[in-house]
Amino acid sequence: MGRKGLFLVLFLLSALSIFIGVKDLMIHALLYGDSQQWLIVATTRLPRTISLILAGATMSICGLIMQHLTQNRFVSPTTAGTMDSARLGILLVMLFLPSASTAVRTLAAFIFAFLGTMVFLGLSRLLPTKDPIFLPLLGVMFGNVVGSLATFFAYQFQLIQNMSSWLQGNFSLVTKGSYELLYLTIPLFFIIYYFAYFFTVVGLGEDVAVNLGINYSLVQTLGIGLVSAASSLVLIMVGTVPFLGVIVPNIISLTYGDHIKQTIWITALYGSLFLLICDIISRIVIAPYEVPVSLIVGIIGSLIFIYLLVRRNRA
Image (cartoon, rainbow, N blue to C red):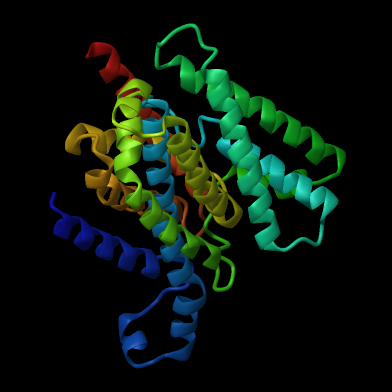
């Protein structure tokens, strides 16, 4: 499907997302300027749809960059300890600075996500094998250790209920005034696009990067910083969305190749489409109630992930 077709599908799914909900929206009422109907659109439906588009694109691009930086197809912020480290940072801020603003919590999440990911990269260099499956396994184990530490503190200080909201991606509480930080992911997209060539070369290995005059360590650190910042924004606003950063970049790579500058926007589009579809399913499967979108993403994503693993072993 061409880009125009993808944008058309994105527009149609966005419109469908706006009209699905507990309260029915009527097109004729909106056309005649019904204030109550427009209030619902402006305060809940449109913010939710925008946040789905931005979060889906962000996590997919973060996965794409992480996979190039680590030269591993199964690494993403959710399998490298990035999100778990960010949660620990948020929890510590809630313990020691309970009245801290969202900006302070986001900064703490970014710092811990960055440090946690750098620790993961350091641990990855100690692996005796080049089997690509071991690296994400290491990341999951490292993330579980960090997550267990966060859970321990959460239980000790009775914050487990607050922490649970970061464990599951949930867009049901997104309203006007509570999601706007996600707009900061847009300039991050352009920064990542600007450095896309360098990330692509780094993905070819340290020797190739050095031979082409690129500072391998500096570019890798920059990429981890951008991924940490973007992932922290998504975590603060809507929680964790599993598998998205793994499966979408892999699907794009199979179809469009590995050059980041040529695939970054198509990756963002597919990520947004995938998350929109999962969110729509989460709202209609037990309507008028809904399940967390992370549950739907986890089910569909795990099936695709298994397929990718099987396909790799057969290849």
